[in-house]
Amino acid sequence: MKKVILAIFIGILTFMGAKQVFAEELETADKWHIYTNEKTLHIDLNNQPDPYDLRRAIGALYAQDKLNTIEKVKLQGSFSRDNENDTTVGVFYRLLWSDTLEEVEFANSNFVPSRFFAEAKNLQKYADDGSVTDFHIRSFQQAPLQSIDSRNLKRMAVGAINNVQIAHLKLESLEEFYYSGDLSFAGNTAIQSIDFPALKTGTRLIDNIPNLEAVNLPKLENVGTFMGGDEYKIKRVTLPAIKNIGTLGSVSMYSARLMVEIPHDATIDYISSNKMAFSETQKTHYTYKVGEFIKITAFDQALFGRFYNGYPVMGEDRRFRVKWKKDGEWISPEGNQIFQYTRGKASDSGTYQAFITQFDEVVSEFEAPIIQLDVEEEPSGGLSFSNINPYFLFKPYQITGNKALVKRKDATTGITVSDTRSKKEAWELRARIEEPLKDERTGKVLDDALVYKDETGKLSNLTSESLLVYQSGALGEEETEIKWPEDQGILVNIPANASASSYQTKIYWDLASTPD
Image (cartoon, rainbow, N blue to C red; front, side, top):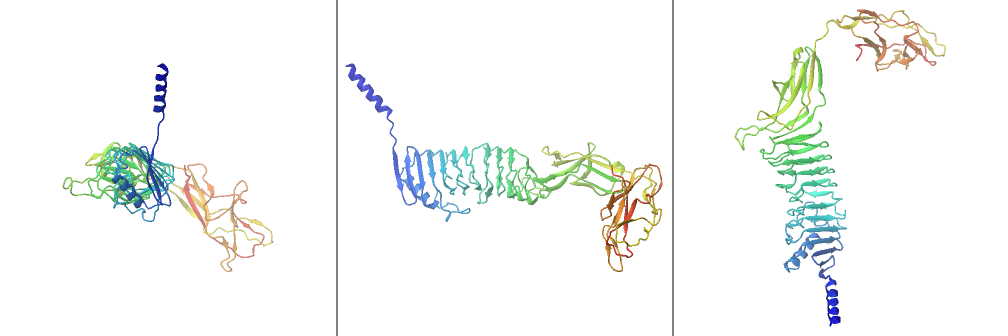
């Protein structure tokens, strides 16, 4: 009796341990092989079928109740692009996937066709092996995706993943959002941040995402419409590489308040009334003399939305404005530039700071740098030439065929500097020429012949660049005559191949206070 029972028990164990897996063949055609394995739908493509034809084949299987319990789709192979490109929508045949579908995998493919999973209303996970580069129009439009693993995705139609349920949406390789007639993520409440580090161009980029708190688009260069809609948590966005924005905000003027920081040379074609774009100034210290026209600037570029007289309040002006404080107190001038066409007074000196306001309230998302303005009294007196000899002559020289350094004819230069400033400062004299020594009759020139020889014996050619030839000595002297030793200063360096003639040119003298 014991042996019989043992035999029966072993038989039961054997039966229970043997798990049988059944694959059901659904359709084998020239361009695909479709079958199921448990609750996974396998689609193996051959010879690049038209996506429209495949949609119809899968739709027919659903109509026969053969796919109602599918939980996963595994597609292998690529599609033809002949009848489906960037602008075509699979509008004439929609795939109504069952609510059991939760996961999709693509391998050795090229793109996800338009509307292919648009109505997979419980699809949560998508992955591919890096072969997929495009998500076509509305490909996952209503799918509540919680995971997207597509490491080589380059292009995506606007609206392709509108209902994605990922709080921090990051697509590392995406380079282009192309227009499809849809809005991007409109009304999506799940997204809190968008991070597309490789994105360069797009349109209808970010529309009405109420919980959006952060945006990272470091390479975005061109965008059609940027951040339309009337609701965002984020109030300031930086676009460091942007070149052009078609429309900032919505065409309907009642849109969410937003400040966009852009490079100083970027352009924007249109801005809604509740938005502004700016590039911060790099200049924070201005110095003028009393009586000079002065101005200070809050931004290198400031673009403000237009006035809108209408919804939600008739006559309400929603524009941003720039107002200023001087030494911590509000002042009446306002705008990106103040004091323009105003002659400065010493009392204008002080610290200034620009503030962005709206409805006469300071916008907290912006803080401008503090700017220092110094308007200085001009010191009495001045620095000038009191005498300049109109001719700078050199001793005659007999051509010998050898190089020679010719000295000045007169012991003095005939140049005198007058310094009548109340506050004496060091000064310097520089010389330059526009043309070399030249025989005006024959046109012959002596290139690099006019030189300056310093106290060390170093020779420097006089050129069109100002050359330092004298520095002031002890401060306090009101009159200084420029003198050099006989064999120093400006001389003529005769080349060995010079022709006998009379040569001349003009020397320009530059007198200035020595820079700090």
